[in-house]
Each structure stands twice: as C-alpha cells, then as structure tokens.
Length: 319
Image 1 (cartoon, rainbow, N blue to C red):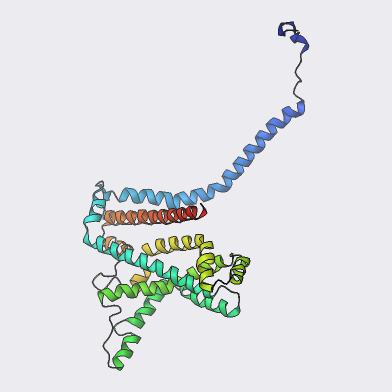
Image 2 (cartoon, rainbow, N blue to C red; image 1 turned 180 degrees about the horizontal axis):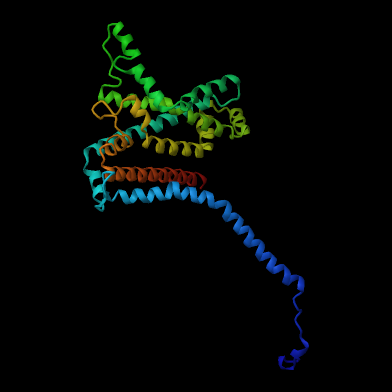
C-alpha cells in the first residue's frame, strides 16, 4: 500500500502527560535557582577581586600615561613615561641589579633547597628539627633579618670587629660595590631557601618507594636514583618553586632597605627599591607607576616563559 493510502486520521500521537508538563517548569526553576545560588556565592569573591586587583591595575595603567606629582591634576603624556624607562640610567642600573638578584637568588634557593630536602626526606625527629631550622628564617620578617645581618656584616659589625682585633682590615661586605651585591644575594638565599625545602620535602613524599627500592636492587647509586628517578618525578614542584622564587625576587624590597639601603652608591638598588624610595618619594608618580607596570609585565612574562619551558620538556619526555 502506498503512502497515499494511509489514513492519517487513524494515526494519533500520544498526548503529553500532565506529570511531564508539571516536571518541565519545575526543572527549569531548579536550574535557575542553582545558577542564582552559584552566582550569589561567587559574587563576594568577584567583587573583592575586582576592587582589590582589577580596579587598581586599571588606575595604574592610566596613571602611567600621565605626568602627575601626586597632588596637582594629572596631565596626559601618552607613552612618554615608558620611553623614559629605556633612557633613565637609574632604571637601567636597578634593572640589572634586579636581574642579578632574581637569577642568582632563585637558582641558589632552588639548588640549596633541593640538596637540603634530599638529605632530609626521610621521616625522623632529627630531620623534622632540621627542616624547621631551615624554614625558621622565612618566618621572621625580612626587615629584621636585614638589620640582623647588617649588624653582623657592617663596617663596625661583629665580623669586622673580630677581624680588626686580629689585625686584619675590615672586609667590605656592605660598603664595597661588587661585594655588596654578592652579600645581598647570599642573605636572600639564606633567608628564602627554607620555603623551597618545605615544597621539595612535600614533593619527595609522593615518589613511590617501590621505584626507589627497585633501582637499589638493580645496583643504582643514591646519586643515580636522585638524578634519574626522584628529581624528574618532582619536576612540577621544581617549576612552581622556580616561578615563585623569580617573581618574589623581582619584587624584593624590604631586605634591601634594612641590609644596604640601596648602597653603596646605589649598587644594590632594585627596581622595587627605586620605585618606592626615589620615584614615589620624588613625587614623580606617573613615571613611578610606569616603572611598576613594567615590573608587573616582566613578572607575568617570566612566569609564562618558565611554565611553558617546563611543559615543553614534559611533553618531550613523554613522547
């Protein structure tokens, strides 16, 4: 029989039940209620983040395009402040000092923290004591640590006073331009490597003991086990530690103030120190804000680059 022979009047679709009609609006109301609840729970965090982060960044971007002394009305100057960043010798010198502190400080804290953590990865009361000992400087304010080391390494500090008693001339830990930068990096590494120890010890606890025992049975030395098994398995923790170290040291300020106060002759001035103690203090707010925006961009770029390189190495190892 063809389609034309069908009696369409005899074909009847089932009518929707009253229960289905009631369930559909109820389901929509439930979804709307859940969405409203989620939005209400997220709203305070979004408002706080917007007020504390987004709005200040937008204001900073605007101020960096102005000539403003902090009191009178701001004059829009476009990208003039950013052009000054590349012509200002103080900014160039502070940028170089910041790069030295960030690179050598981050590598020092990472290396020392990793070596220390590998020695203390087993659980025992003595290892717990030495972990706490390593982390303790991180708990103390960096300002206090700077003043402490200034009293030890200064011209009339404890070490130089002892050297004078022995008939040896004072060592310019803090008043020789080259040695002052080395001293600054050394104090920063001593103060911050304990945080890396905590991160690495936590990462080392996740390494399967079976792998280590199998390598020991095969005759691998402790150094080979660490290099071929342990360190590759905690590489994500190493990446996180490196990013935190770099970003933190690019913004280092407090320990510079208390240890060297930017001296001698500005040889230990970092970008953060220059912004806060000279640019803002000199009421050059527009230029200081441009310096701060540049510092923020460099910090973000370094984080992205380090993470991308780490991910690339992970993909290469997996392939």
